[in-house]
Picture 1 (cartoon, rainbow, N blue to C red):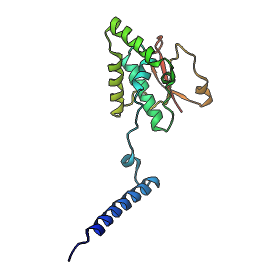
Picture 2 (picture 1 turned 90 degrees about the vertical axis):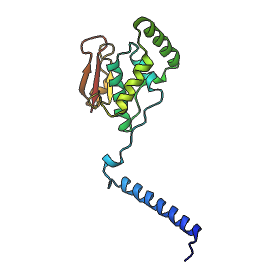
Picture 3 (picture 1 turned 60 degrees about the vertical axis):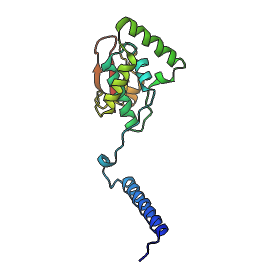
Length: 169
């Protein structure tokens, strides 16, 4: 029997498309559990700039917490929440602080921020599942904490000028 190669190829392609379509339908109907279908959240490429702009002193623990909050927000379909990334002078601001901290403290802020992002991207959560944070010794408790009935889940650097409070619903 002689094989008709064009028919075999087309049948193979259609079979593959059918399998992918069925898999998509199963996923959409939640027949496949989330643990199987969950994908890694893609963090913004310039997230390291946002971390540096949020904490110009280069505290690694702070970078881990902020990166965790960003990832937690993105996993829930929320905006990343880093207002610092909207700065018109973001590159100049980060560059100035990068060089200052490099000279005065010997820290490489970009390396620290990227290291924190990689660690958080490996699945570790340093923010106790928080979706919001605020520098509560510098700024007052935000109005949305009461409006959204949010709970404090973690306080970093408590009682210092660097205090960060993490919240979730």
